[in-house]
Length: 174
Image (cartoon, rainbow, N blue to C red; front, side, top):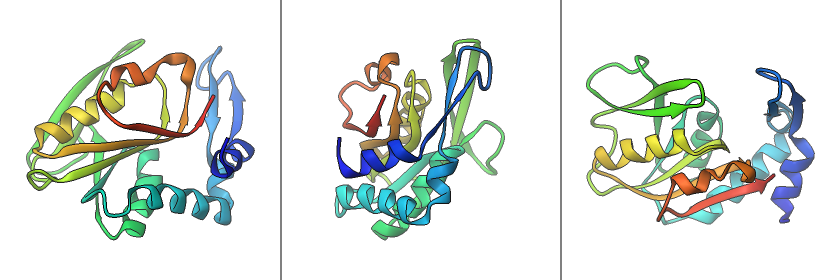
């Protein structure tokens, strides 16, 4: 493991049976509460993509927490990818499957410049459905997914399989 993955591992708390029995929730609150650790994580991500992306997109809600400071560190803009019905104006939407139904994410139709190189960020890669839907939105918006960055990957769920031919990085894989 790298120094950053060790830092994340030490500051992420497992919460058993949340939000329902049998699920072990990865709580990032202790990581966010440690200013030095949070800065180190943001700096680690930003240095990996310096000069390689035109914009950062973050998936609601925890992708916003990491995506916005990475965008600032890179000196580029930030685009929120939100749950359906949360954005004003014209939007494009993508629906994805969940174990108990489906969900939808949206982005404003003019959020990306044509051909823009996008770094997509979220906190956890689980089954990959949300990230795949976000990639669909970025590409339908005229941009290119240059890379996808996660703080934590739940490797046993094989979420990368839903993101073929896309560069995926996770700071910590469990």
